[in-house]
Each structure stands twice: as structure tokens, then as C-alpha cells.
Image 1: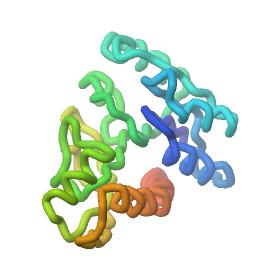
Image 2: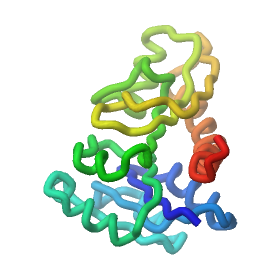
Image 3: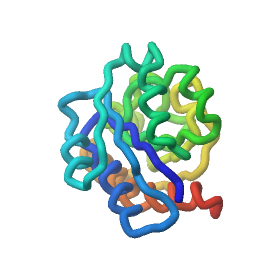
Image 4: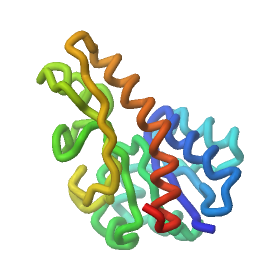
Length: 189
């Protein structure tokens, strides 16, 4: 059984979906959720599902305290699900090829610092893209530059607003993210 730790900064719908996915599985279990946002809804979602939620500051991350705390959970995999801070190089080095992230666009397009959530969806609509999607990728020391594990596309209609694009992306995330995580940790991807 693989131990999974999720990092999230916001509402936590993807985190909740992954936790629920693994509740009935013998392949992995979510042992903790870490967040840098003391007001994040992910805290409440995790607690309802009896998963510890650990809040930390950016300074805790930089100074290595988060690395010490996370080691007490003995994680095999770390999943970033809407986590907005850049991981320190020392953190990435401690878990080589064991940290994955989901991005709401088809990388390498629309990635990098500041490209998350509605910022991505607005850029896609403004640039009149005819498709977008999700990318699940390994995390390295740069934003959204790790090797791609999985991508799924969806059409963008000329009538789509950024909000409509966000709904389409959310549907893809909910459908594919837990399944890809499971295939990855069981080495069946």
C-alpha cells in the first residue's frame, strides 16, 4: 500500500476526489493533506474524510520544516492538486520522480509562474484556442516543466467563456486525475 500526501492551496475538490478514490482501494491511501492556506476549503474536506490536514507557511517550506513534517507520514508519492507555491529544490530532490502535479492546460502551452486556474482559462479564450485540456506531469525545480505523464484534450468552442472552459477542465480533472495517480503508483501506466 502506497502512502500518498496531497498538497493543495484552495477548495480541494481534486484532493477530495483522490481521497475518496483510494478509500476503497488496497493500492494506496492518502495519509495527509498539506496546505499553505489556513483558510483553504481543502482543510474541511480532508477532515470530513478523516485525513489529517497540516497548515504551513511559505517560510516553513523554505526553511525545511515541511520536509521534516512530511517525512513523519512516510510518503511514497506526493500529489499537487491545486497547489500554488513553487517547491524548493531541496524538497524536489528529496522525492525524485515521486511528485506529480495536474495543470489545467496542455503543457507546454500556458504553463509557468502565474498560470493557474482562471488565468489559464482566460488566456485560452483570449487567444482563441480551439482545444485545451489537462496535463499530469512530474514536478521538477521549474514551474510546469517536468516530464509529461498524461494529457487529455477537450474542444474549446468560439462561444465558450473562461467559466465554461473551467467547467470542462474540472470534469476532466475529476474523471482522470485519481485514475492516473492509481496507475502511476501501481506502475501500470
